[in-house]
Image (cartoon, rainbow, N blue to C red; front, side, top):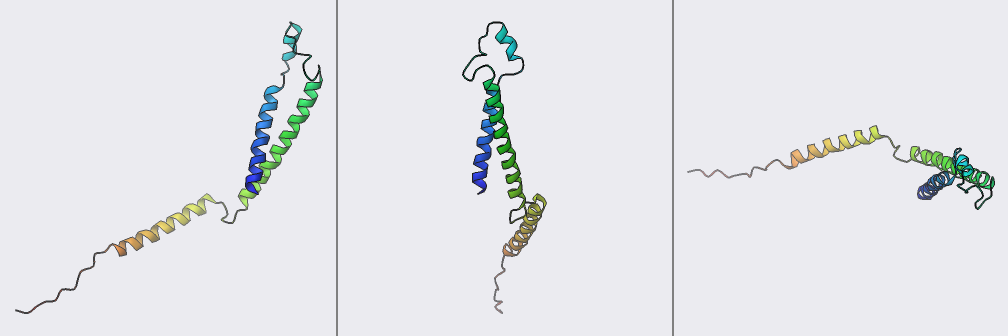
Length: 117
C-alpha cells in the first residue's frame, strides 16, 4: 500500500512541476503586447490560465494528501520508526556480540599430562 501511495505522490509532484513550468507568469502579457503573439494559443486568451490553475490545484491537493498519508504510514510502523531506539538496540546488540566473541576467542589451554620422572 505504501508503494502505491509513493508512486501517486511522485506522479503528483511531477505533474505540479510540469504545470507550473507551462504556465505563463504575470509579466508574460507584456511580451504579447510587443508582438510575441503567444496570447492566442491552444486554450485561447484566458482559457489556459483557468484550466492550468485548476489542474495545478488538483495536483497540489493530491500531493498534499499523499504527503500526509506517507507521514502517517511512516509514524505507525511496527518498529516505531525511532532513530534513537534503533541506535540503542544496535548498541546493545553490538555489546552482546562483543562479549560473546571475547569468550569464544579465548584460547583453550589443552590439559597436559604431567609424567613423573
